[in-house]
Length: 188
Image 1 (cartoon, rainbow, N blue to C red):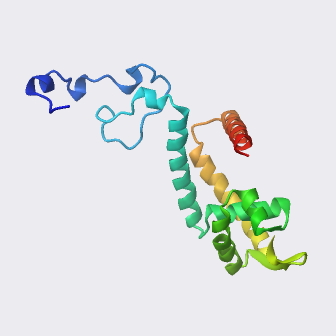
Image 2: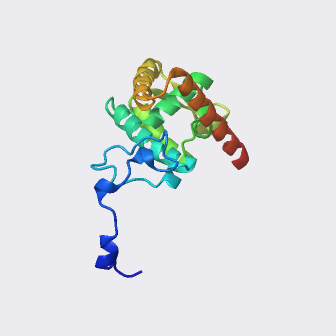
Image 3: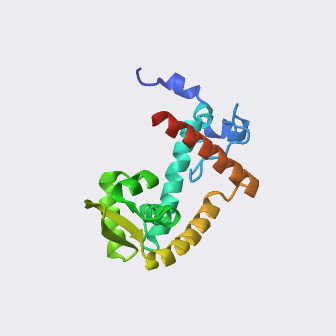
């Protein structure tokens, strides 16, 4: 495609003549893109805003940033929380078991466990049944730290889900869980 001629450019509407986002077809009830200097100048196409995959991806980026920054404020990471929560709920396990329970890649698990061990949040000991592998246990310090992380994450989720009612939050979690379970079962 070549450059636009001056006649073609003259036929374009002025920004002030563009409809408001709410007036666009398919835009009813959709949230505006935050942080844009002029919503009429930069607008996400309606067909993109109707794609669940796009919306999930956009929300995931914002959610990850919020959680990562919030946890960094107390010198923690989301993987620390995942491991501690897994150990608290299901008990001691091998590195491979913890990887499966938490969704952390096995190659990353060693680094996460090294950090948690260094901080005294988990204990690592040889497996009596197989000396080649370690059994990881949450320490007393880890048990005390986990509820603090729960409280922080509760606050961060409150911020993330602020526009939703309690019933809508429950519904969203239920729908996301159903989708994840469906796709997890298909890939197993």
